[in-house]
Length: 296
Ligand code: NAD
Image 1 (cartoon, rainbow, N blue to C red):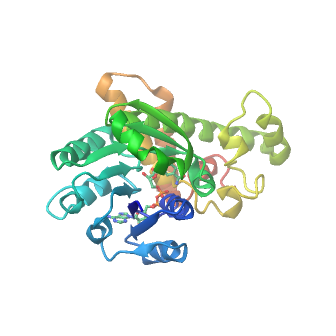
Image 2: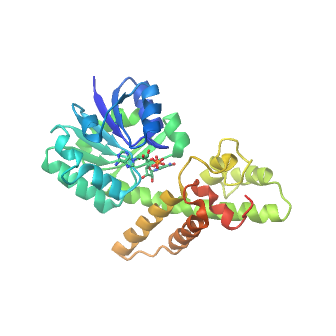
Image 3: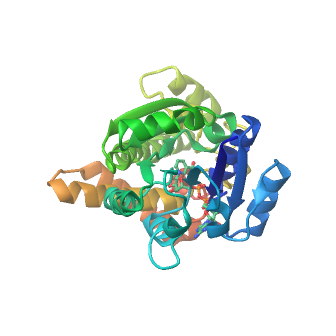
């Protein structure tokens, strides 16, 4: 049976690992959070004492960590797990990180005979739980074919967009658009509510009109519009404001690298930075609506 090491069991990694268990894979897990490991063990995973212990004997290694520094720290350097991964194994990094970091880790892996793909995801925590994520893959086609059955156990759509790092570039394009759309959806709802409109009715109208979007239909930023959205549970869980801020910073770096202009992306980065400074960095990113509707 294919043995998978899964490192990083947060809002996304936890439910993704659970879907691999449901599909019948043997999964060894590690996270710095004892509670996160406990939930995975309750779902049938084996707890490892360290990331290095988790990759022992694994044919597939999956990581789902917050940012570039966590991924580079996990794989590279003297304490890095690349040294412990079996040659011939395949590494799938699902974190959203800088394209250059993805390339750096993939090159170090290749030197050890370990194939690696970047496979950041879209679909949010609901998509992770439902096993309906979109995987955005950068790397060799052969490596993707080896990964495909595993990705299919966690998602519905798989896009191969280019070589190592390309998956991250495409993911940043998606999240830059998402960051702008969420911010302006919050503004639109705040404007309507200030005029006495019902946010639920306004959202239902927008969901079948020309401004329809995931921000309106799945992760609506106004409390009480959608029972399952983070906004209706105090903006807890979901996709953290500071993770969106990280992605918009990465998009800005990517734009500078090629001289692209991203005026709305830069504006959105500042909005999420303001929301973070207002003390909402750990809340779901839809809390950006609080900048224009403090009571939301
Ligand atoms: P999270 O903060 O909920 O989870 C990250 C987990 O990594 C935590 O449990 C943390 O303890 C663990 N961790 C950090 N460093 C570690 C290390 N060295 N070893 C082991 N565990 C470590 O984050 P998340 O929301 O699950 O997001 C993970 C990645 O997925 C991020 O790059 C994010 O941008 C991306 N992403 C998130 C969403 C979302 O909706 N939450 C959607 C798409 C992509």
